[in-house]
Every structure is written in C-alpha cells, then in structure tokens.
Length: 260
Image (cartoon, rainbow, N blue to C red; front, side):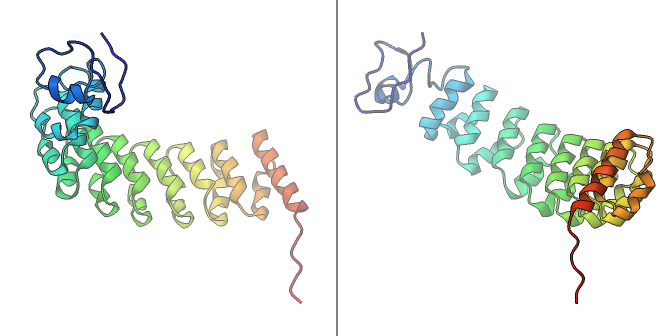
C-alpha cells in the first residue's frame, strides 16, 4: 500500500506496523527519513531508491556492491566520488554511464574506450576540449557529434571528412567562415547549403553554380550583389524570387555618402 510522502519534521508519525522486518524501522522510518511505497532502499524501484538515497546519502557507498544494477547505478550519484569510481568497469552499462557523469582525469579517459556508446557519449560531453581528439574517429556517429559540438575551432577542419552527414552539418554550423570552402564539394546538399549560408561572400558566389537549389538559395543570401546576375534566370522560381528580394532590399538601403 502506498503512503503519501511525509515532510521530514520532528512530529512525523510512521504508519502502524510498517516494514516489520526492516532494520531501519526504529531509526530512519521513525524519523521520517524513509517511508514504505515512497522512499525505500530495499525495493526494486529506482524511484524509491533514489528518494531514499537523496535523503540518506550515507547509505550510498554500501550499495555500490549490491547485486541489483539499478541500486548500484543510483548509489553512484550519491556516494563519495572516489568510492563511485571503483565501478568504472562495472558489468552493467547503466552503472558505467553513471560513473562517467562523475569521473575526472584518467578515469574519464579510461571510459572513452568503453564498449557502450552512451558511456562514450557522456564522456564526450565532459572531456576537456584538449582531449576530445581521441574521440574524433569514434565508430559511433552520436559520439562524434558531441565531439563536433565541443571541439576547438582550430581542430574542426579535421572532421570535415566525417562519414556521417549529421556530424558534417554540425561542422558546417561551427567552422569559421573563412574555412567553410572545405565543405563546398560535400556529397550532402544540406551540408553544402549550411556552408554556403555562412561562407565569405566571394566563396558563396562560387556556390551559385551548385546543382542543388537548396545550396544556391543559401548562397544567394551571402554572395556579393554583383554575382547574383548568374542566377537571375535560375530554373528554380524560389531562387529567382530570392534574388529579386535581395536586389530590392539593396535598392532600398541608403548608400553611404563618399568621403569628401
């Protein structure tokens, strides 16, 4: 039977005859620091275990050797960091993911080689930027995507040949404008379009001849006005309209007076 959560106050009165065989009945339960159906360490309920350890973190370290994987994984969150690190090679990947959230230094580098992709994704979100290069060629695209989101700009060109377009799109969003020409011949038109929309004007002008209309549309927004004549009669109506809109906006913009 579930009982409503009771506030942790001195006047808390536990339900009659609960948990008759529990060693904590006369201590934590009597103090309102656990409650059957709500916060309990000895049930197979992640929600109740988490609530118990959140109130009583001193019990977490003792749970690190528990047979139940979820109890170990939750205990990692509340145990001292050094103790939690002992589970770095736990047989359950969920436990190792929890360790990766807290690991630092050599322990985090060790987990960068873990067989579970979610462990490595977590590592990629936490490694110092200077160490991300070791995951740049990870076999899983989700790991490499996290690397692409955090890698220092100077290292991004090393990922322009990534095999997954999702990763290359992130590279196209982050590369400095002067380096985007590296993606001008990418196999994926969406990658080329992202690049064309951020390129330096003269580089974008070269993209006006791209075979895909999405790329040409993006390039129209970046190319110099004088280059737009090349697509003023483009076979795609969308491109022609974009060119007309940009030329109209330019005509309405007051020109700066020449220096006297």
